[in-house]
Every structure is written in structure tokens, then in C-alpha cells.
Length: 190
Image (tube, rainbow, N blue to C red; front, side, top):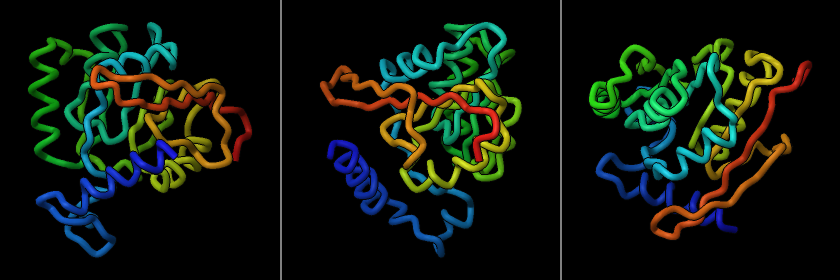
């Protein structure tokens, strides 16, 4: 129910944004924007990376990286290489400013790319805050491209019948509840 409410809120945020609703025929959809920008609270970012058990040698990919807070935190806290994928030029500019401010330009990269075209094979950790249908759209690529043992963490939305290893509920500083899901990619998963 809570996730349905959050999904509804995201939908309303897009529908009433200055850009209007994103639909398949819109200019935004043609530019590859398939989810609205809704920042993940910093305490949720921290827990996502802890849940994934990020460690030295990992490569963190963040799909729909927004302002870059997940990749910046991964690099700053764990010293790992992190790549964010974002389509919105404004968010990319903001990400690059945040990377420079944090002094992690040697570890973090932001690529302007449609998340549906990302080759996930180099990632050992994948983070995402997408929408339910986008998670399901990404699932086959995750199974095909990511190595067995890679970790996937999703904020608020699951992956249908792919059961998570762990589900956690946490509250942010505004007392809003968030759900985090963790999966490990299995060999032969199709």
C-alpha cells in the first residue's frame, strides 16, 4: 500500500510538473526520460550502500543518478569507482558540480545515457530509484549482463516475482518511510 502511495505521488509529481506528463509520444520520452527526478534522502543513500555491502574494488552504477548523490557518497565513503547514468542535462550539470565540490572526480563519472542502453557488465553494485515498470524493464539486462554475486539495491520498488534477499523499511529525517530491496544476481538467471 505504501509503495502504491509513493508510486501515485511520483506519478502526480510528473503529471503536474512544469514539463507535463511523460508519455511515449512526448519530447521527454524521445530524449529518454522515463522516470521523474525525485531525490533520494541522504540517509536512504547511506543505507542503500550499506545494504549492498559496498567494499574496495566494487564498481557502483546508479541508474537515473539525478544530482549524483549516490555515486558521490559511494566514492567518498568507500573509495570505489562509481558511475551515474542520467539523461537530463540539468541534473548532469548539478552532478558534476557535486562531484567537484566533494573532490571525487578521480573516482566518479556521470554519463549522459538512456538507462535502457547501459551495459551493466562492469558493475558489481547497481542502485536505482526508478518506477515499478522500469525496474521490470531493466531486470532482463541485469540478469544477462551482471556477474553472479553482483548486488542490486532498489529504493521503494521491487522487481515483480524476483524475490529480494532482503527488504528493509527505514524512515528519513522527515519521518517518511522508505523500502529498500536487495538482490544478488544468480548464475543462469533468465
